Image 1: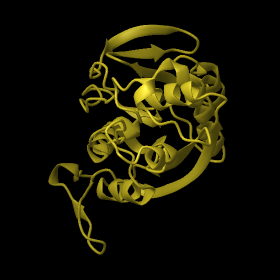
Image 2: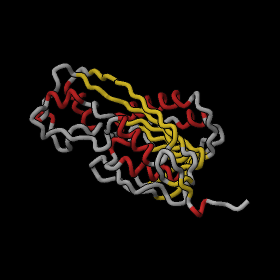
Image 3: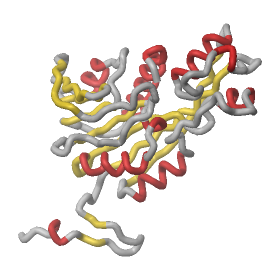
Image 4: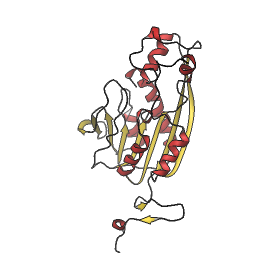
Amino acid sequence: MTTSLSWLRAEIQERMLDKLAPIKLSPKQILLEPDFSGLNRRAFIKRFPGAQIDTILDRQIYRTIPLRIKLQQTLGRVLPNSGQLLDQGIPADASYDLILSNLSLQSRSNPGAWLANCHQHLTEGGLISFAYLGPDTGKELRNANLEGGHLQALPGALDMHDIGDALVQNRYSDPVMDMEYLYLEYETGQALYDDGLALGLISAGTQFHQFKVPAALKLTLEIVYGHAWVLAKNRGIGDSKTAYIRVDAIKRK
């Protein structure tokens, strides 16, 4: 997603904060993924005063110590010109009470692996919250370009039930999933085409004259929201009736 749609991430950021409003949470360490032009750090600082806030942008992780940002360390890298994130994970020594992911999960080739990695870096009682583009995003483009060839699928744009299952499989507790549709209307086919490229729905290299613009000049965005807690982190994986505790998690009184 390019900076031309940073307004969309900014809008989703506000909606995510609204969804977190009724949740009692006082995190000291927060990871926002990704950083983007238009990210309102002040909103997070107001909502979570005193928290250390890290944000990911391309290869770097930036640390905000209220109203001050400095380069902290290298995190990973982005595939050039593809828009797909390499699942290289959070730095091994990083630990967070809250991880928020804003319209990034749909670009990951393995969302389950990313959720598992986040679980490792969330503290006991920590929360993961995310929003991503669901499978109905850009359905008008598919209907207009039935011959294919100029469109590409978002690898992590899974049904919210699939992501909910992945949360349970990766030992998150009390997952909550919901979704909404946003509808974008355009004055020109060129503007719609530009947003389709920015969203990763149109294959890179496709020229405007090769692309069939939907007659209605509209674009549907399916926004899927989810959050879940990290509880009983030392409990091993078992069935629904049996809990297993790792030996190294047993402490003598």
